[in-house]
Image (cartoon, rainbow, N blue to C red; front, side, top):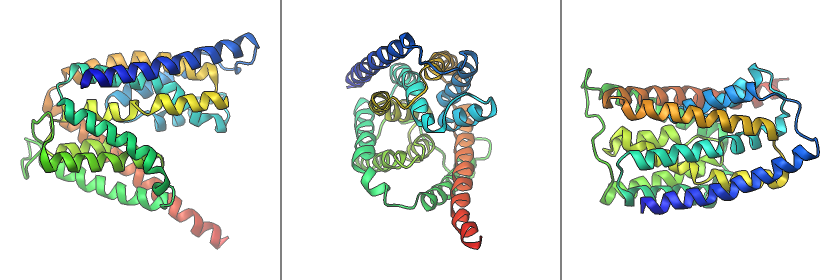
Length: 299
């Protein structure tokens, strides 16, 4: 079944690469590529996808660095750049971890399928929710999760930590499927899947290392499809997206070696850091969105 997942990912990505290559060549021949060099977006892609492979995420980093380095990209083209630029690096992450990290094939396939279903079926439901409230609740829940995981570290040992399982069974598998469905749906509201998925699998008794193929695969299986839509619409910067892709591939390969060779206890510390970081950014974003209408009303 893991082989089937790899085949699907490679097939989707090959079709995407064909779309991307054809569109890039057409725009280059027409002299319509944006006035931006290769170095800055390449560096951004390297840093962001290096961090993504460690479980930190890439989209927010790309947006922040694009603004800081004054990348010549229109705001309306940023979503397309994020999806297209990170598509191949994200699929590469998934292929590396699915191949190198032992994980139960049934658990992998069912959780990837539930995330994909959540992103499509759940989109209508999530679109009706207040994004700010969802972010505040998720941020608070992740903070509590991070504290509990910290207390479970072997050097502290105040409560049971995550286990060594490479798969889920019975009720735990059902919880995992439902949870990843919800996380997949939340992705449509711009809320990242990595940290919530990590935390859920940790408390269901899975090894932190085994969580990587699941969370990487959950995102990778969606990106080729969404990226092709942006290519059809033409709403993305061609040169910057390609540079991010190239830099991202290098970043993924280096970071994957670090994760693969990292001791399990250190990997747990990395997971806790990611969860606290995500909790902070999510809570901060939600609170700022809730305050904005109040400020507008006051004015």
